[in-house]
Each structure stands twice: as structure tokens, then as C-alpha cells.
Image (cartoon, rainbow, N blue to C red; front, side):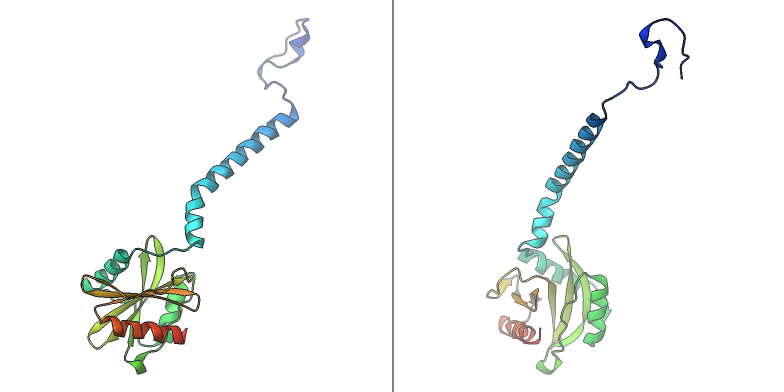
Length: 192
């Protein structure tokens, strides 16, 4: 702080080094406007993400197929290996923000092998793995009935079937024939 000298001028009683007096309302007005601008900028930045999460989201067909192929090429078919749905479902639910249905379809010829976590379009999804004869089937699951069921899609010798049920969206992928993959979709719809 500076010294206060007696000088006889009217401003000599004011410390030259301290902040000049301000009007009380002006500071809060500017800080309020700055805060509002920051909130608006943040909302504009994240709006596409929020809209995408709440709107109809579906990954690209090639991305779903590629994820299935990655699993077939490596040794990582499942993160939790179990034929017991009461083991697979809680394991997946503990790691995701949703609880997928894990039906036991072994009586219909679809043996549960286990489950794994996958990421499609930067979103975590559950993947249930079933086997029919020598064919492995990846069933990708995420919350929301965002897409209507479609006819099977064939890409590079693999079939993909999209279906919905129980508040979830499913994509089944396999080199199994399309008719049997559609049978799996119908069984899921009945059990969810």
C-alpha cells in the first residue's frame, strides 16, 4: 500500500494503489452475462450428443459386422464364459447402464456361450454370444427401440437381422443362414 501524504488536494485521502470504487450492480451484471454465455456455449457444444442419445440411434451395418468379425478372428469371443444366463446377465448389467435380457434358448438349438462388452459408434453395448451347431452368433443389445425390424441383410457371406423387444434394440450377426437367424430373433421377441 502506498503512503497517504497530506497534500491539500481533495483526492489525497484516497490510496492511489487500491482499486477504484465500482458500482455494485455492474460486477454482478457482467459475471451473470459471462456465466450465461458459458452455459449457452456448453449446451451448443453437447447438443448433438444429447440429441443422438435420446433420438433414434443405430450403428452402421458395416460397423456391426466388423465387430463380429473381430471377435471371430481373435480368441475373445466372450468376456464372461457361461451357459448360465443368471451369470451372464448380472455380469453385463454391472458394467453397463442397462440390463439386457439373456434368454435360455438351448432347447431351441441356440446354446448360450457367454457375453462380452463392445463399443459401436462410441457407445457401449452388450453382446450375447450363442452357438448353433458350428456357427457362432453375436447378438448386440442396447436400450431403446430405435429401429423397426427389417429383412435380413447379407454382407460378405454373413447375415444380419435387426429386431426390437422389451425396450431393447438387437442386431444378430452370423454366417448362419438367414432363416435360422430370423428364428433366433422370433425367440428373443417371445422371451423378452
